[in-house]
Length: 121
Image (cartoon, rainbow, N blue to C red; front, side, top):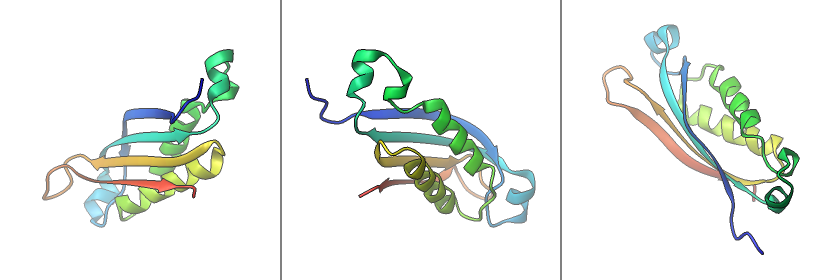
């Protein structure tokens, strides 16, 4: 058996964070929704062994997302880039990280966000 592609998904991570260029956003913060799709190599062993050491621990990924979201930034693009770079750096099995971050109800606008894929290659 051969796995052509494998992904680990983290969907609808809801966090309160303090990103934005306006003082109101930096002081009060707002709600964000983060979604990730992690392209993973080398998890064939997990199919056979049922052992967490053979794959990526999604709770460890979640904690890194939360830590990066806790660091205020002006731009959501900057936060997304930091999250992707950190996850790629910390988990050598990853080929790429797709991320979508949506800021809920920013001042003067509808929900807004960014979506990007960052690859190791």
